[in-house]
Image (cartoon, rainbow, N blue to C red; front, side, top):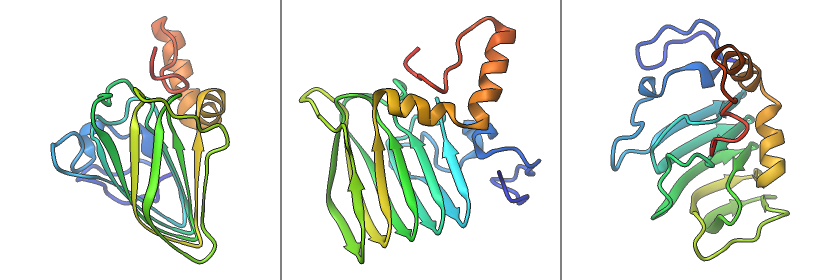
Length: 178
């Protein structure tokens, strides 16, 4: 949940961060600008079709960030860059099958790890480049069914499912490729 502050001039009504429109996020979709994602002592989930940007600036301390990078609105050509500055935090990346994770440019201080249990990348798959610094932090990569279950365990999914039922369509948060 949000903390009750104003983001991009929009008063916060206590809605989850996924309820803010895409245009409310500074730098979203503008070429050459990274989308800021901040989680200091809280949980921030960006699920479904939340952006078209290809660069993200993730800063977190003692918090959790969930980034959904499965949307087909993110073009398959070129790399998606995730710049990290995380301390005692967890970043969960929901990626499509076949995506390659390049974590060679991440500076690790203390006990850090990148966990990708089912990680099998393909030549034509999406490429995600991680850069920056991790301090006693963890990055978890979820694919296919695990990514769908991670997205479904959120309030945003419940709200999207109820809205989809009223509109006679399928929810988009669990599987953005629909």
